[in-house]
Amino acid sequence: MTGHDHYFTAQPASPDERRAITVELAGRTLEVETAGGVFSPDHVDLGTQVLLRTVPAPPSTGDLLDLGCGWGPVALTLALASPQARVWAVDVNERALDLVRRNAERVGASNVVAALPDDVPDDVRLAALWSNPPIRVGKGALHALLLRWLPRRAPGGEAHLVVGKNLGADSLQRWLAEQLGPAVSVDRTASAKGFRVLTVRDS
Image (cartoon, rainbow, N blue to C red; front, top):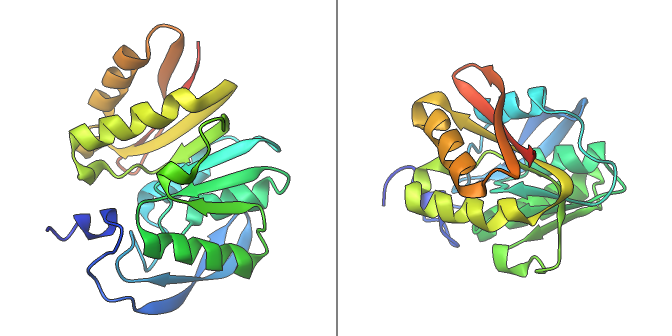
């Protein structure tokens, strides 16, 4: 087990040391709870900051997905920006899901549903998908993850993925375009601080 993959498991090995941090999300200053054993427990990581600063406003209604939610910066942003939408915060890490639930309650985001991947009903179609995907799970696992969720976009729904340039953003863009076919476009819509934002939408 490496220093990177402990938060990709259902029960992370790191101690569950809870702490409160202050963050800026959806134009608000919020105090949230984080812990060891989740991704970027001490701040909103740079990739997620790039994602949140560059994507368009989410749809006001429908099902929205934060894929690989961690303690919840993306899910909370979606929920606060679109209070009439249902926001799925999906992760395999049980500690992360507990934190998302607690943070949603803390900030008054009652429209967040924290769920394991298999707990999202098969008929849910996504008006938007935002993700800082877990690149370090390995190429095979990452590809399987994206091919599971990207086809669940509703007609007109967009997915926005932030990926480090040095972690293969450009090759991932080409691979997604090949896999998803001509009915779907995969465009680089932003580039900042060593990160690319890839947008998947209907052609």
